[in-house]
Image 1 (cartoon, rainbow, N blue to C red):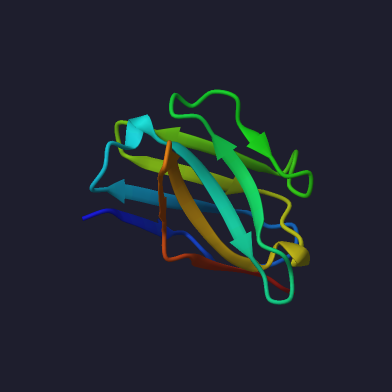
Image 2: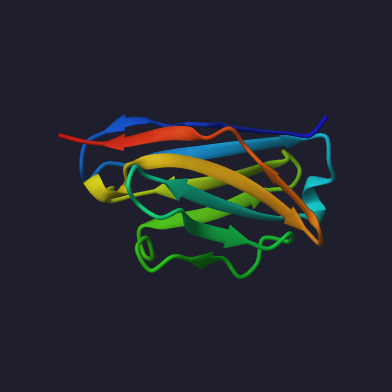
Amino acid sequence: QVQLVESGGGLVQPGGSLRLSCTASGFTFRNYIMAWHRQAPGKEHERVAVITNTGGTPDYADSVKGRFTISRDNAKNTVYLQMNSLKIEDTAVYYCKAVRLLSEYWGQGTQVTVSS
C-alpha cells in the first residue's frame, strides 16, 4: 500500500521558519522524483519545489526561491521542505508528490498558516 505522510505544518509568524517532512512507503522511494506542491484558497495550485531521485538539481517556484530548500534522504524514504522567511502569502495546504514515468502518488497534505 502506497503512502506519503506529510508532517511539520502549523502556525508560524511572518519571518519564521518551518520544516515539512514527507515519509514514503509502499514503493521504491529512491527511484522517484519528489516534489512539494501547495494549494491556497482562491489561488492556483502551485508546484513549490522538485528534486531528482538522486537529490541533485532542485528547482523552485520563483515565489519561494532563496527562502525554501528541498532535500531528501533516500535511506529514510523522506523528503523535506525547509521554509524560511515565511510570508503571509505562503499560507496553504502543502502536499508532497512522488513521480516516476506514469506513476504519481500524493500525500494527504499538511496545513501551513503564516499569521501574526
